Amino acid sequence: MNSKQTAAVVAAGAALLYVFSKGMKKAESTTTTAKSYPNSTERSRGYRNNNPLNIRISSTNWAGMIPTAQNGDGSFVQFTTMPYGFRAAMRNIRTYIVRDGKKTIREIINKWAPPSENNTSKYVTDVCTLTGMLPGTVVSQTNQQQLSSLVRAMAFIENGYYCNNIDSYINQGWNLYINSI
Image (cartoon, rainbow, N blue to C red):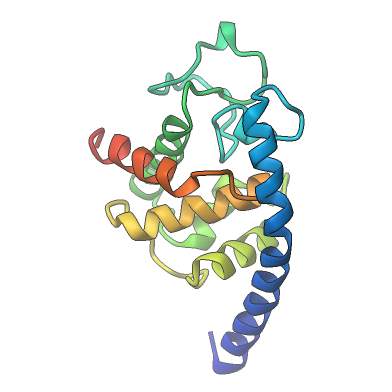
């Protein structure tokens, strides 16, 4: 990336953070209300399912997963707690890195949110803006700060806001994740 491209990414990032910060007050009050009413439609699907990165149902039997036969969603995994949802996201990213050789932000997100289903380039740009990392940044599966920052930003993109206590959930998810590898 040359200096003009870097400047453009920084400018776009500042603008995006400004927009996100303006919407946070409303999002925070919505999540507070939704927390009082666990079945409320005010909460996003990812947060209602304790699956903040919207992992689809597959043959994987995730730790903390509600059995598919009892899953009321039908398309996306439901977890018993939010930390298990973050753990699963971290495990998925680890699989992309180790098994699939997808090591950069761009490669991981292209696999996570393929262009056939998503505006992947915008997803990459938004995640990079929120994390301060560049699209070509190599992600370490054992760097807590980096992986936590990545899943935090992806949760925002997937749901449109941060849920209450997100950092606590991510830290608990990290502990579950790091103890499972």
